[in-house]
Length: 65
Ligand SMILES: [Cu+2]
Image (cartoon, rainbow, N blue to C red; front, top):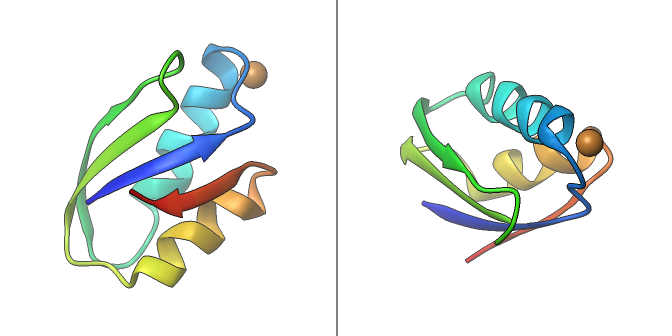
């Protein structure tokens, strides 16, 4: 699954998003969170709404790509 994330401005943001994604039920691996493009890629079969909610809980805006 790929996500478009808005609001990340530094590597701390990347780390926060990566950690939030890792904790979502059904996510088996966070493949990449790219700061410049704002694209995150995860493996597994999570509920898309749960993934978006986890990122937004950290203060960023997310949508499924
Ligand atoms: Cu940051």
